[in-house]
Length: 236
Ligand SMILES: O=c1ccn([C@@H]2O[C@H](COP(=O)(O)O)[C@@H](O)[C@H]2O)c(=O)[nH]1
Image (cartoon, rainbow, N blue to C red):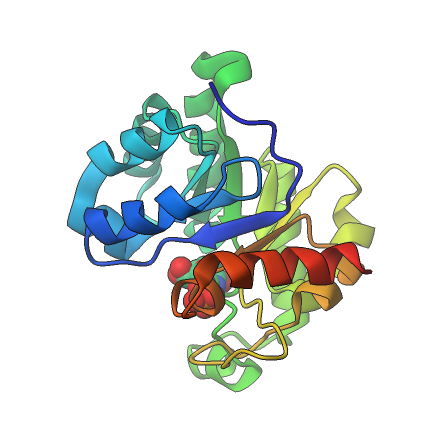
């Protein structure tokens, strides 16, 4: 039975071993946050860990950012749906045929289908780095174009920096789900992230869900950090 989660926080369980992820999950309340399983943890611990988290009542975002040919990505999102995850994602830059194939693949799951989101431009990427890989239009325009394309293909939303949330909300409408990593409370280190905002700034900009990893997982008291972030959001 899944908890009713009103919290916008998704804790990124970026660990190299199932035991470490479950140790943190043991301290978390599925009513206070969702959890995210990304490439490191999934590669180390596999689908069993995802099933365990789902069994423990967590809504799980499987953040594997699929980017491949349409047939492969469609089959991969279907496999994710069979795990019972709450959200799965693909790279929007995989193109419209790939995104439409993924949407189509999830139809058979009806009301039980996971949310399908598309990664736009990674929150660690700067405008200069985007230009260096050959994208000539401004970063914000690129994000907007990829998000519009995701919406046209029937995706439920996108993964974006909260810095772009306002313009995406205005363009893609109130139902389009905006998931924002790159969240950095004032007391935390930026690390490799570049397009960051604080939790309260991200919510003000219109992000629905905030992905938070190291500010919680690297803290001496992860549960207190989660509580501090929830309190910061509640105060705004
Ligand atoms: O654009 C993106 C897409 C995904 N992520 C993922 O979110 C977490 C962020 O972790 P922090 O420790 O809070 O930086 C991580 O798992 C990334 O893979 C992202 O950061 N940006």
